[in-house]
Length: 84
Image 1 (spheres, rainbow, N blue to C red):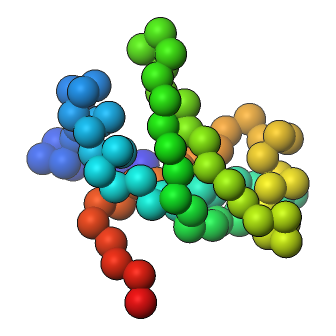
Image 2: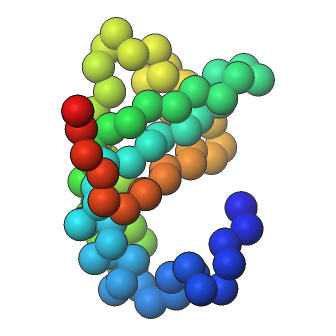
């Protein structure tokens, strides 16, 4: 994904602060050849300078079945949001 230099975040602490402040993320995985996305509140934790994301998908949301069989999962943090 192309990110213009103006929006690049290179400071590790700034990235952690951003994620903690805006932890309502979009989780994207692949089901066969189909992308699947869910908006979900997540938590992050750090271990040896690696960030890990955890959250919960309802059993009725079939995306949870795709998470263990994917080499890469995309998690998008978008900043301030509102729920109507």
